[in-house]
Length: 434
Length: 143
Ligand SMILES: [Zn+2]
Figure 1 (cartoon, rainbow over the protein chains, first blue to last red):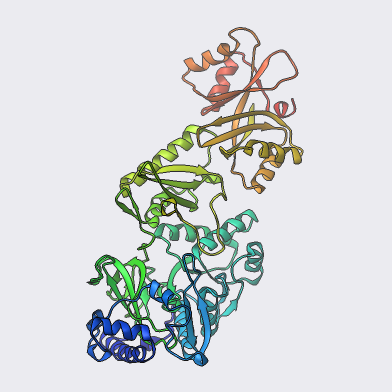
Figure 2 (figure 1 turned 180 degrees about the horizontal axis):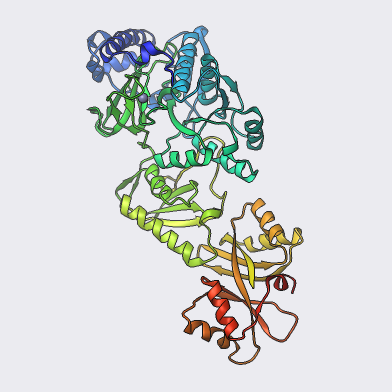
């Protein structure tokens, strides 16, 4: 697969790091001068931007967390006057206020380039037709992919999320070759296609670039089998930019290359804040080094992963992050055991009959945490005999106990009982939080 | 010999069974026999109907998980020990009945029961050897 920006994506590490340092310094000078929050943060730590002389010195700067962005709602973190902002996006505020982010004209161009790089890494070329099922709107997914596809020179179908039956018809008639969207919506699409009697085998997709929510290797196997394409993981978050912060390469499908000429990634221990070396698992932290309107300094993503600096078969020199295995705030503590929903998903998906539609319900009964895993009974796994279904319940419960060390009650439910969103899946209901 | 039975996964929620029967009624499907096996959380509804294809289609369209299994419809003499006459030869041949339920038969004097076996062929041959009447599928759908 051709590399979109050969100079930067395959740059030797030494040169890359020297660019990172000069861009970092310029960013720090600018936020210190223009964003009161960052100036205060530096002061609290007793430093000024001139104290940052090496990349390692970055560790002296305090973290930025989601709450800081909320406290400065809506525009307090912007580093340029509004007249230079050409686009605003916002994350959905499931709890509290949404996070508002802005882009200058140059930010939009940078983002488009990184998305073009991402699509190219995922197998797209200017010959391709991109079926973009990410939602268009305040969410960064739709427009992010859109601008990148255009910059790459591909033909983009801005179909957005929803109106699923029409999407299937478009897929049949317009013959797109690249599919983009959230994995949970794409699975929903596959389900509807099946109901309509349309097989992905007859469609023309070669790869699917899926992101905006974590998905497991087992989910990849499922997506690839159902959709007859190569499933590529893309990562991004609106606070840092949007989709296109990192991407798996088509060649390796093993870790997501982070575009390090624009972002510095660190892994920290989420409890102590201490920086962790390459290879160790912890919370991913980003510093943007080229953004103008909304720079972030040591922003805690709450995503759990590790970094791998080994050279990659694709030729890119940029460090790779593992697929995100969970979020620090998704982590459930059930009777003292740390459990990530993605781990339960892996256990469930080892049983091929199970549809990837599940939901975890955590509750507290008589001061004891309870975990119920709701699993939909699809055609493949149904039986006319009670004992077969009960054995399946028992097996899943045993597997969860064995792999995760927690007791879970499996509750079989009818298909489509578990809430399907056109965007992200609701995987956890924690009733203890009320 | 075989009779096709459809089975439906149901959560134990009030009114769910009535929804299924209403869907079938609206599709003009006649239920010949019905049995609901349930646990505290879920149930499996087993049905013999006069039009399997339509039943399966409308139920799937309404989002139900529908399975199909072959079962046997066996005539059981309406005398004391009638059921034992059927079960005994099967038991001695080591064939287990997974489940069974009654069929509403308005014609004839004998009862008809639906039996589910894992080894259907073996069950059929033993029943034949013992001169027990197994009713043909097309006859059952239209009884
Ligand atoms: Zn690579």
